[in-house]
Image (cartoon, rainbow, N blue to C red; front, top):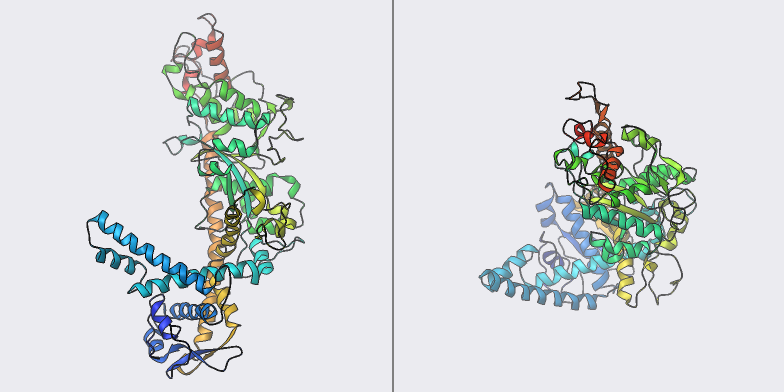
Length: 609
C-alpha cells in the first residue's frame, strides 16, 4: 500500500499518513519516528515521519499540531480498527458523514442559484471553509468530527463519570472539595421571567431617572400579582416572559461560573446576583460545611463580599400594587401635566426608580411601604420598611419570612439588568450537592438504572418524546465537557493508556514536550477562569458602587417665589410626590390645595423634575 506524507490539514492528509484508508492492514513506515503499538498487537503504527517532524519542529504552533494529529490518529484508530462503540459506531458515523456531504452539495447548488455564481465556485468555497481538498476529504472531516464528539460524550458520561462529574460540580456528596486541575463549574439550574424595560440613555441617570411605560408598569404588577395569588405556577406565568425561555416555561437550563463561556449568555446581574443571594443573603446556607468551598468556586472573595450590599433589598408587595395603580396617571383631574410634563414626576416612574430600578438583587415581601410625613429621602424610607405590617394576609405564595415564593417554595429573586426586570428561581442550588449525583444523572427512560420518580434535570420535563429527555441529558454532557477548556487533553491522556507510544530519534523528547504543553495550557486556562470570574465580579460591584453614588446624591435649591430654601432634594423623587399626584387625580380638591402649588413651576415638587 502506498503511503502519503503527513499534511497539516485537519483530517485527510493525516488519515493517509497513518494508513487508516480503505486498505486493511496498518503498518509502520520505515521513516516513522513516532509510532504506537496497540495492546495485544506486535505491529507498530506510524504516527509521524521524520520529514514531517522536521518541517514543523520549532514552529510557533508545531507542538500543538503534533498533539492534534496524534489525538486524531488515536481516536480514528479506536473507531476504525478497534470497533469503538459509543452512541454511534463507525458504520453509523460513516453513513451520517455521507449524508452530510450530500447536504453540502445541495447547499452549494442552492448558493450558486442565490448568488448568481457557479456550482464549482460554491463547492470550492465549502471545501476551503473546512480546510479540505475534495469530496473524500470533506467526508473524512465529518467522520472525525463526529467520532470526536461521540468519544467525548462517552468519556464524560461513562469512563470517568464519577470523577469528572464530581470535578465539574466542585463539591462531593460529603461536602468536601473535588477540585483538581481546573476550577469547577458550580452549576445552578435556573428558571426566570423577564419583563423588558429599557435603560435611560444617560449613563448616570439610568440609576435614578429611568422611565417605564404604562404597559410595562401594568405587566410588572400583573406578573407579581399572578405569582402572589397562586393562580398559576411559575412555569405557567413564565409563558409571559419576554425572552426565548418563555417557550420552556422560563427554564434557562444550567448556569455555570465558567468565565467567558461560549454558552454563558447571562448578564452579571442575573448570574452573579443569584450567586450573591444564595451565598450571602440566604443566611441558612452560611453554616453549611461546604459554604467556603462554594463561595471560593464562585469567586466570592472577602473583597467581593465587602463590595456587595450588606443585605438583600426587601421590596414591599404594595409597591407593585401602586406601580399598577399609578400606571396610567400622567395628568391631574383637570388634565394639567406634572411640572410641565416631566416624565420624571409620573407616579409610575417615581415608584419604578425607587423600588425596581436596582441592579442589586431584591426579594418581594408581603409588607406595606414605609410611612412618611414629609419629603423624606427615599433611601431612608427603604430603611424604615413597615416589614411587620402584612399587606394582604390572604395571598398564599409568601413564606414564613414573608417572601414571595413559587409553588415549590423557592424564593423568587428579582434584579434589574439592561434588559429589564428578571424574576428568578433557583431550581437546583450548589447547596444541594448531596443530591447532585441524582440530579445530574444522564440516564434516559428505558435505560437500566433510570428512575422516573427521581428529582433530576432530565426529569424536569414530562414528555412522550424520548428526544426531549435526550436533549436535556446532552445539555448536562455539553456542560461537563465545556467547563474545562483543556477537556481534549483528558481524552489524549486516556487514549495513551490504551496503546504504547514510542518517540525516537529526533522526536525522542516530543512526548515530554507535548506533556509540558498540555500542563501549560491547563495552568493558563485555570488562571483565565479565576481572573475572568474576578473581572466579572469587579465589573458588577463597581457598577453597584456607581449606582449607590448616583442615587445618594443630595442638594438644595431656593424657591423662586418665597426665596426660601426648598426641602433637601435627592435625585430619587420621594414617594409622597407620586401619592399626592394620584390623590389630585382621583380626588380633586380646591385649587388652593398646596399640593397643586407644589407641582407648578414655582413649587417644591417642580425641582425634582
